[in-house]
Length: 95
Image (cartoon, rainbow, N blue to C red; front, side, top):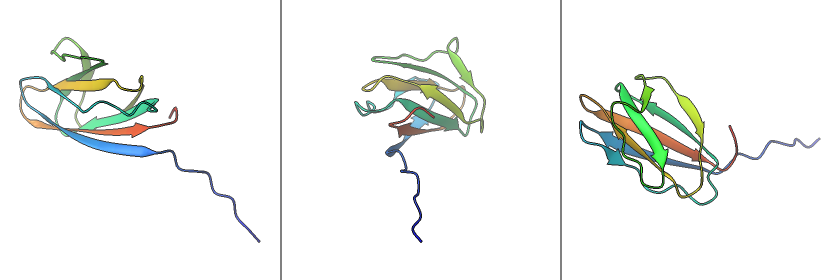
């Protein structure tokens, strides 16, 4: 008997250190279609070719994973009022 397992989409993780000054991730792979983000601190994020996060952008509560559809080669920018890390996982599929 043989089993067929679904193919795992290509995943590429990054960790972005957050402070009160915005920081940018590395550019996503050209094949990236979605990213899963979760932070260990309340923060604000923004996606784009040259994103600059401020405290008026997308609010991401601490320890609350979210998935966003993105374009390949985009980046994510993050900012927090304290310090923390933003964990980013790229996927070649729509999650």
